[in-house]
Amino acid sequence: MREKLDFKEIITISSLLFGLFFGAGNLIFPVHMGQLAGGQVWPAIIGFIITGVTIPILGVAALGVSHKKNLVEMSETVGKKYSIFFTCAIYLTIGPFFAIPRCCTTPYSVGITPVLGGESKLSLAIFSLVFFAIVLFFSLKPSGILTWVGKILNPLFLVSLAVLVVYALINPGAPTSGLPADAAYSGSPLFKGFIEGYGTMDGIASLAFGVIVINAIKGLGVEKPEAIRNNTIKSGIFAGILMAVIYAAITVMGAQSLGYAKLSENGGVALADISGHYFGSTGTIILALIIFFACLKTAIGLVTSCAEIFTTMFPKTPGYRFWAILFTAFSFAVSNVGLTAIITYAVPVLMLLYPLAITMIFLSLCGKLFGNAKIVYQMVTLFTFLAALVDFCGALPTELATSLGLDAFVAFARGILPFADLGLGWVVPALIGLVIGLVAAPFRKSAAA
Image 1 (tube, one colour):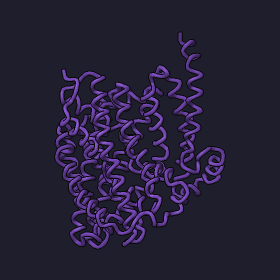
Image 2 (tube, rainbow, N blue to C red; image 1 turned 135 degrees about the horizontal axis):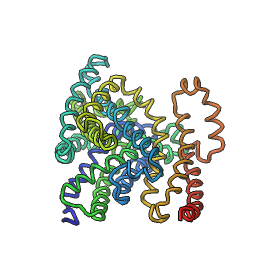
Image 3 (tube, rainbow, N blue to C red; image 1 turned 45 degrees about the vertical axis):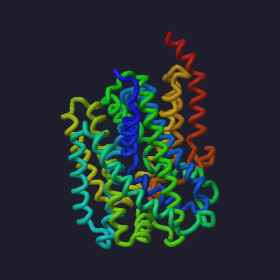
Image 4 (cartoon, rainbow, N blue to C red; image 1 turned 30 degrees about the horizontal axis):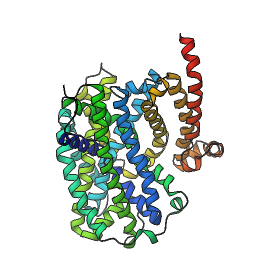
């Protein structure tokens, strides 16, 4: 029985992890953030890396440290009913409701639309049908995910991305120091970048992808829990460093593009403008390859993860093949709604789930310090959920929030929650829940005895 993976194997696992994480949002959000941040680009990058790199890597590590098989077992520390709710919410969000469809609509919007001269329902339907046919083909062979993603698709993506990013940084459109910053970034760019990192969905996805990484490590002959934990952390560190470097490069590239392009509507448009500026019509092909490979590999990982966890949670269903086909078909249907609609409705859900995922990650990492007392998990989760619900309501589309009469509630709640104006209104309530849980834990233990 092996204790350690060799360096080559660690790099392969790191490549798998990076490939699973780095998809649509990882490209479109940082480049657009760079344009908005302007001269405040570096504080924004630091904030983005916290939620886009550090939290996801800690999430993978938390699964290894807690010795739990999956997110279901990890979240059962709060309660069985909560475990089912939280796990389903996480996987459906990073799966067929938002992330998987976004993996399809992003390459269509960025790579196909410029060639066709505009969007059409027919062209989107045809593209999404082909895209998901490829995704389903690979997803029905989950045992080969290390090869498909780690050894083939990820290197192709990195080579394609490097061509564009390196050339753009060598030939910058403008120095970042003198660029104007959007109002949202001029005051607190670090915190704005922190919230922008939610859009990648990697913080919540880490609780799902950790299972794939651990299974891949086991497949290489490592079985002891401590050895799995150590190798998971090592792989996560290498993947995190690569992600941070690429995020920084893409964000700076976005900021520098203001020297030759106007502020874009979204990151997809920004990438099209940048590639077109440097490579003309050839740039469209390069960008199409970058986006396609990035999104394809992530979509395969997401379908595989979702199908595996639902097979585990609901063992009486037909099995993995059934869930893989169902999630792929549903994602195909949602993708035809369009990229803008997907992003619009994903933001409120992320504002609710991200704080719950962050607190779960840190509690799992530090569980031994308080004996993994259930009351601590429960109190932190309860207080975090109530505060995050405010951010969920506040992030709803304006017309929907107004029609539901939520404006007054959100204004009142944000007036009493510290840091709510920064999108971090859940932090203090989570700490209050932690204190209450720690105080109550000894009494709960005595009562149980």
